[in-house]
Length: 636
Image (cartoon, rainbow, N blue to C red; front, side, top):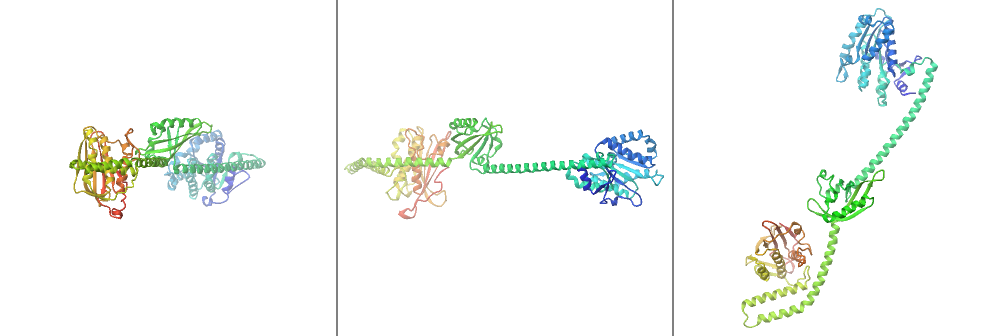
């Protein structure tokens, strides 16, 4: 059974011995006019020539029997039918003049009652009924009737307006209640290749009283030949069903494979997009094609549109670019490239990465792209550096302990001699004052040597310290060094300013700052050392003293400013130890204070170092535990 036969049976039609299919009565009873015979037949055809032949016989039989015809067809079909009828000896000109043969163009007639793509019933009657009445006026015998052929429904179906075509079939049946006529419609079988439209096809067949199957089935001359054709069609239908089922199984299998592939791609995408690592896809020239979202966030990339096509190696520090190129070369040859390097984000944050590069091969096995996976090891490197710094500090502590042990006796001897000099009769007062300062500085040297170079185990107690006196004494200590560079110094402090602090640590902190300022100053420059009462800027409540040291030296570059409090970092490679400011910071924070600084190069160059110390901290041991200030060192 072929597809068209199945469609006929699904529509509730049955076949007579001549091959014509008749309706079972569903949906067509309303289509017959009471009191006269009305047939509404639909013909399906495969070959246009055979269709024209059958239509010509249909019209010619009606005219030959004395009836009238209304033909609503395309221009091509009207011309070919006219040729066949003329060849059979029928004079269509006489029939047309007498209104027994009324030929209308299907497209033009359809356009007269279609509104918004849908047939209007009143306009349909106004268009078709006058032609029917003219034809009926020429009928002289009750044995004859008007026959109509309509091709408009086929035009609607071919345009995809299936629902409109069914509605037009219903309107023909409604018109049959008003006027007696028989109607034949025709559809090419090529219109019915979509099984999804079976419902509309069955509905359309249900609007007809008879169905004429396609010619490959109806042109057979004998019942035996038709039965053989039916068997052949049934065999072909079985074969077709098997092919369709196999095809459906293949489609279902392909959909399952595609679904698994989609899930696999989603899973891989989820891994890449949620990985903490930065994943790049590069072309063989090392240009960026893709960066994973976590990588974009880690590198502070806001606009991805500017990245594709840029060389990946350009993002690395200059000293790391050679190793990056070598890793790319190894991956291009099918190996695995790797290195560790640093690159800065647009915000200036330097990050360290451990990089691995592998090749992505195509279906032919050739390397098509390069996959880069970079793991952020910034914190790991910081931890490693912290361990290294700890080892350095431990070594410095051991060295300091050795120094303290070795120089203790010489320091004691010098201290004794200074004491004898101070107590000698006739020593001038100015000399005694200078000897007193020397004695204090020797005591501090001994203290420094004994307390290592970290957080000192200061055995001295907190006491009230005259800030102005300490500032003058420290500046006096570096007076010779300042005179050597012809520096002008200005010390300004209220004589009443007092701090409850450890005097030795305050002296050391100021000494480190002054030494650095002198080293950074140009010959003939100036130093300002000032102290004033103030409030804690971090909370606006705590009373304290702010000591400011300013110079008009060369200033610090931004990269230096980021590292000045890192242990062992120094710009004075030959003479610097890199721990002076680190020690100063710790000394100030240890006493509950904090530091700020600002520096500028170029015009108006110079550096300002500012430290804040509370006047007095209440609590145990007369001062209490040091107040911890968040972000103890700040840059203004």
